[in-house]
Amino acid sequence: MNNNRWLDDGARFYKEVGVNRSMHSIQTCNSAALRWLLFLPLAALILWQPLRADARDAPDSFADLAERLLPAVVNISTMQKVQRQGGAHEEQQFQFPEGSPFRDFFDRFNRRHGDQPARRVTSLGSGFIIDKTGYVVTNNHVIEGADKVTVILHEGKKFDAEIVGKDKKTDLALLKIKAGDTELTSVQFGASDKSRVGDWVIAIGNPMGLGGTVTAGIISARGRDIRSGPYDDYIQTDAPINRGNSGGPLFDMKGAVIGVNTAILSPSGGSIGIGFSVPANLAKNVIGQLREFGTTRRGWLGVQIQTVSPEIAQSLGLDVPKGALVAGVLKNSPAEAAGVKQGDVIVGFDNRDVPESRKLPRMVAETSVGKDVALRVWRNGKEVPLTVRLGELEKVDQASLAARGSRRDSDKDVSRDIDALGLALSPITPELSEKYKIEEETKGVVITEVKKGSEAEERRLRPGDIIVEVSQKPVSLPADVVAQVEKATEKGRKVVLLLVDKDGDPRFIPLRIKEE
Image (cartoon, rainbow, N blue to C red; front, side, top):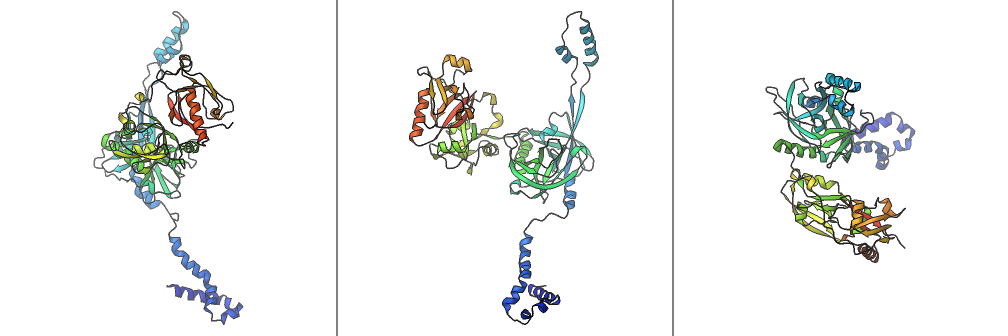
């Protein structure tokens, strides 16, 4: 029926229930304004209907979706040999002299129990089929150390699985089964970056070894960093996830995989409504590399970075804290070849802004090896464009990467107290090198004392730390530090930026200048 007919029916209803009897003046009035005033609530209801259609209501049921997706979700069963601790272990713990009755006893005990066969440990997890040819995605921790991996379909059929590749950094793994004549059901990765906080999701997995189980909830948060690895960017959900759900999929309401269920936050080991999933956009790239190469091939820049705090931003002349501060440039790295310098702030990478430091590692890792990438760095109060050709992270020998300098002859200055910073400083002398185990090639000035109650103490500076730069200028003598503090004061700056070497780990530390 049309809106006019609906309004006419409404008028009759008002008349039948006595509105017109109690309001005789309105009954006899032909004013259009009064009529519309009477029916405003009804008109508002009509106009509200289209707006309501845009809202995402809770589904009446997840049954149709679950029925379609369950066959693509599998159980992962692994077996691992664990060697029992035998006689050799006891012999190392207990040593007795020749002829001792205790030694004779333990020798007999070791012969009886020391050569027991290894026991087999079974664990359960979840996974999902992404290709009808038999490729299965799961978590690395589900299959790590396994001697045998078995994939169990929803209908109960079992297949031995080959480990195609695995990646510890994202806790993902790719398996392959040969299903023969069995027709497999597969699912596809979706666009996790388009999912929103509050969207409905369902998780399917194998909690507590019970078999295929469906739970539902919403996306509670995005971009969670739970400090499990360098590329943390988890989707948080309140869909119940328990032990055994690891490696299972998190679906949106269209049936696309938007996450791989990986971890939960729980004091008891059971679900308390805080679960975490690797987002599909990250997983899709990793799984694609594992499928093509059997390993990951991540881009490598070759810098040590840290967060740009408000104090650091102020000291560098940045309007707002953003980007990734370069604390160190590794020798023979792509960054060094491109001209990146210690103290630069990387604010742009591959034509994208870098909003914060923790975003940069993932941006670099997801970029193709060998690609020429545009960088924007903040240096000396302005942006500087650079171009870097990315290397391959997996080929880098991490143990050989250390940004070191050469020590200068710095015995020409004496120790000095710098009250403005709450520090006592000294040149690096042989005596201090021995006392603080300072390496021969280290350069800078050494902190010999940190004043009690100073900001330096709050920033956890300690005797033995080496100040390498002040306000991005190299220092080798305490007098150099004093000079840079004075220059900063003349410019009206209240903070100086120190580059401090703490046991070989360079860190930028902002320090407020104490007013006299």
